[in-house]
Structure formats: structure tokens, C-alpha cells
Image 1: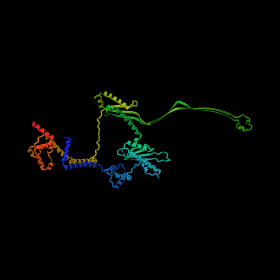
Image 2 (image 1 turned 90 degrees about the horizontal axis):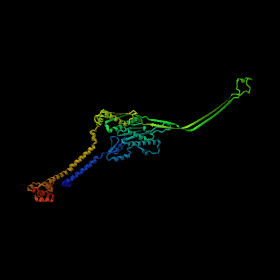
Image 3 (image 1 turned 135 degrees about the horizontal axis):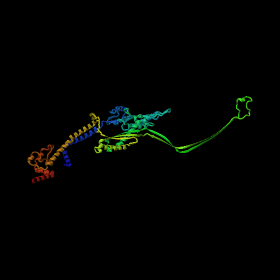
Image 4 (image 1 turned 120 degrees about the vertical axis):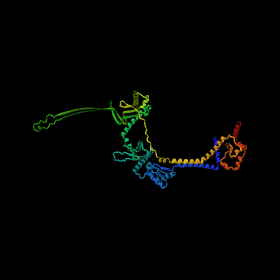
Length: 559
């Protein structure tokens, strides 16, 4: 049956239901649609809405007092940092709290200066306000990092003094709270952020803690020590060499058929060398200084010396005696000084990197893979030759230096079957699952209930009428070519001759409701009609169907 015929048949069935049933069907359909839409809106609508999250204990206490005074129902979240109110009361509650200045954030930034008047403000108060504003701004920035829900920053600025010999350095401490464990890299990032935000603050003076009191990063932390840096360099070198070996062997051996281990001896000492080199061959006279000095001196004594003889009368020499002793001295000095300019070169070398002093490499290869690559059952000579080739590959990939004393060993071993042990994770209980999925279960039950009501009171009567009409139509199609019986015996039984034939022309099988509505006179008159009259009415109703029946009669008589 075509779609047009089906639609026409459904229309006839709906028209045959009568006004009462038709109105009832329309009412049930409209009610079902209304129930579906209403249940979807009502069940999916949250009963409570979140007012604020990430609140401190002080803010929650103040908000609770204000909401209780306004007779607004509220509830505190299980995490102790959120407040919920009934649906539809969020706007009113927020307006009420905004009038009271709640929630009052503890991480106020530079807006603190808007609340401080300049009149009567001392320099100490200005400095304290500046530090508080800086702490609030840094805390806000830290809270914007993924995984951190709250943070507090404390900055200690040095006091300036005129009689202090040494300068004090600023320091800072940060406490963060996050949902999961905060990684060390995040703590290091926070330290760099705080150190770069405060003038004169170094990274070593910043300490980071979590809400449980666990030290995440500090200046004297082992992770920041020179020893840890040296170990990190050694691990980096060993990992790099192992990666190069894996890249060289994986394409033909497979990553699961070998294991490589590297032991590196690395010198991580810091060196600072400064040397000055002079070139005597490139001397040039810069200045010449010549000094000459001549010195002459003479001495003579003409007086008679005072002796004992002179005191004796008439015993000393006369006044005209000989002169006294004489002496003379002549000195001459010459000094010449020549200054030369000599080229010099100063070399300063600082080494903070590392130096590889030795490598020891061990590679273990799966014997089954070697045998498969060599044809199944290789001889010991073939295996040894193949291992020698592997050693050359490993030596080239790892950068082994024979003069340095590096060694590389490749060994064949039987590998055990890899077994991965997975620990069963703790599954949530039935009640936990039920609580989690309670809203979904209620929505599903409501939808199923509405669907059942719609099927029972809406679609079922419609399908019942459609099924009855379809069965009548199929019966008529099967019997449409049968010869109708117009005999009085067949007519007297009260049943229509050739059920399918009569039904196709509109006066065959009639529903009980239609028979009850018809009066007895009309029904008797239709039954008492002669065959010719009934055949004429059939031809008037559907000529094509009547022609098919007549052709079938003619073909049956000719046969």
C-alpha cells in the first residue's frame, strides 16, 4: 500500500472514531507532550545554585549571618569553601551581600589605596599599605595558575637604617592550596614569579608551602644544592646516551628485544682561570731618563793642635809653624733608565658546564631475536660476528672514546616473558554510585513513565484502528477476485457476501458502533436489495474494481 493510501486510511480511521474518541485522543497526546516537556524542564532544573566558591572561613561566617537575617535558605558545601542557595534566589542573595561588602577578599590589591585617605597618612602606613597591595596582587596572579585554588603571600621588606653596616635583603613566603599535589616545577615557577615582582628579592629567599604544611621549595632545599645539580647533569648525560642507543637499535631489533644501561663519569667542577701573557719581542721604547751627578770636596786644617806640649812654656813650636793636614774628594755618577712598552694578553676562562671523563655501556640483547635474524639456528661464530657489529653500532651511537677508556659490552641473553601486573583500582560502592547517578535515574524513570502513558492512552487506540483497517484491506485484496455469492441463502445469514469484495466498496464489514447507530429499518432495506441493485452500486463506487471482477468471471467461464 502506498504512503498516500496509508494516510487516507489513517484519516478514515480517525474520522471513524467519532468526536468523543477523537477529542480524547487529542487530549491524551497534548497531555503527554506537556508532561514530557514539563518533566524534562522540572527534573533538569537544579534545586540549588552556587552562590560563591573559594571562600574563606571568615567570609562564610559573615555570609551565613547576612543570609539568615534575610530569611534566605542556604547551605555550605562539603569542601567548606562554597555557599549554595535555592534556585532563583541567587540574584537577590548576591545583591544583599554586595550591599554589606561581602565577600571581603583577603587578597586585596592596589585598590587598598582607594580606601586610604592621604590626609594624616604617615610614611609607615604608606609603606605597610604598599606591601599589602603587592602581596594581594602577587596572590591573585598565583591563583590564576591551573591547579591552585587559593594562595597567601607574605613579604618582609628590610628596614632602612643609617647606622647599619650591612644591607638586609627582602624575603617572602608563599602558601598555596590546590586540589592535587603541586609539582615541583610549579613551586619553582612561583618562586621565580615572586622574586621578579619584589625589588631586590632573590629566588633563594622565597619559600613555598602547601596547605598541609609541606615544604615545596626553599633556598636551602636539596633540589637547589650543587650536589643535586651535579646528579641531574649525570642523569641527563646517561639518559641522552641511552636514548641514542635505543634510536640506533630499535629499527631492526625492536624496543622490547634489548636493554641498555649507561654509567657515566662526569666532572661537574666549576673552574675560573685567569692568565696574562707578555710578548717580549714586541717591546717599544716608551721613555728614556738619563741622570748625571758630579761631586768635588776638599778639606784643610791650618790651626796647631792643642797638645800637652803646647801648654809647656817655651817647648812648643813657634807661631809660624807648618800648616795642618789637608784632604780632597772627587765623585762622578751617571744613571740612564729606559722604559719599554710590551704587549700583553689577559685570558679569563669560566667553566660551569661538565666534562665527560668516562663511559661504561652494557647492552643485553634477546637471544631469540638474534637467532631469528640469523636464520633460526646460527653457529657461535655467526653470533659472535653479529655481536661485534652490534658493538660497533653501540660505540658509534654513544660516542665512545677509546683513548678516554670508555667501554661498551653487548651480551646475548634469554629474555623472560613480560608480565604486566595491574592492581585493581578500588571500585566505588553501590551506594556511592547510586548517589552519584540519582538525578539521572529519576530523569530516566520519569521519561519511561511518560512514554508508557503516551503509548497506552495515545498511540494504542490509534494503532488499534489502523490495524483493523489494514486487516480488512488485506482481506479484501485477497478475496477481491472471488465470485460473490448473491444467493438468498447467503444473504439470509445476515453476513455480507464476499467480505473483502463488499468492504472494498464501502458497505462490507461494519464496526459494531456503526451497526448500533443504524436503525433496523435501514439495515433491513440494505440486506433485502437484489443482486443486480447491489452490483450496480458496486460499479458506481469503483468501476476499475468491478471491471477486474468481471474479467475474472469471464476467464473462469472460458476455462
